[in-house]
Image 1 (tube, rainbow, N blue to C red):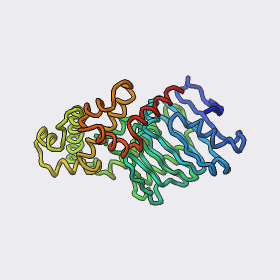
Image 2 (image 1 turned 120 degrees about the vertical axis):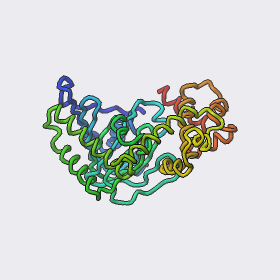
Image 3 (image 1 turned 180 degrees about the horizontal axis):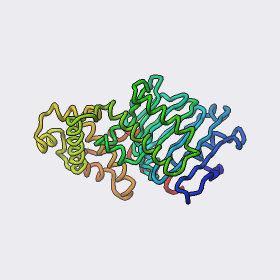
Image 4 (image 1 turned 45 degrees about the vertical axis):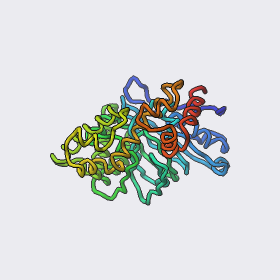
Length: 338
C-alpha cells in the first residue's frame, strides 16, 4: 500500500501512565478518507471497501486511551466491512479479547470460525471477539466504545476463553443495561480522569462485560458452575497436549477422565461437539506450523496433527479458512515480506 499512514496527535504524556490519542479522517481529501482509515486500523483489522465505498462520502474518528495493559477506545464511523483473517493474525501480536459496546448503530453479517455466515438480528448492543480467531462483519454507521481486555480477566469466568468469540448480548438484561450505562458514562468522562481513576473504570467495565457473558453462558454463580468450568479447563488442556496423537477422539478423552458421555458432550456443546473442537484446534495449530516452519511439507504437518491424508487436511483447511494450506502460506509470506 503506497498511501501515507496518518499519525496520531498525542494528547497526554506517557509519564502520567495514561496516553490519550485521537485520529480523524476529517483533514483528508474526501477520496482519501476511507483509505486513510484503513491505513490507521490496518495493524489490527482489514477494511474491505468496494469501489462504491471508495467513491462515497466517509467520516470516522477515534479516541484511544491506554493505561498500562488496558485500552479503551471511543469511535464514530460510517458503514464498513471489517475482516480479521488468519493471515492477519499470523503476522501480528494482537491477542487481547475485544468487547464492542454499541452506543449508537450496530453490526450484522458476522462470520466466525466456519464458512457459515450469520446475520445478527438487531438490536445487538454488545459483541465479544477473541483477536486470536478470525472474524468478518459489516459495521453500520455507529458510535462504538471498545475495550481491549487481557486474557487473564476473561479466564476468571471462562475456563476456555476462546468460547467467548462471536458471542453477543442484546442489552435487555439488567446486567447488560448496567454495562452499557457504565461504558457510556466512561466514554464521556475518561478524558478528565486521572490514570488511577481510568484504570479502575476500565477494569470495572471489563469485569462487568465478562460477567454478563458468563451469565449468558451459565458459567458463574454457584459451586456446580465452578466445578464445570474447572472440568472443562482440564479437558481442554488434555486435548491441546495430545493434538498430535492419531487416536485423539471423544473416546480417548472419555477414557482419560472417566465420566459419562453426556457430560462430555454438554461441556463442548457450545463448540459444536468434541470432534469439532479437536478438528478446529488441529487446524489452528496447522496454520501456525505453516508459518513457523516454511520448509516443512504440508503433508508432514497434516500427518503430524492426526490427519489421515493430505487431501483430508486440505479440504478441512479450505472449508474453515477459505483457502488451501499452500495459498495460506504464500499469502502470509507476502505480507511478511512487505
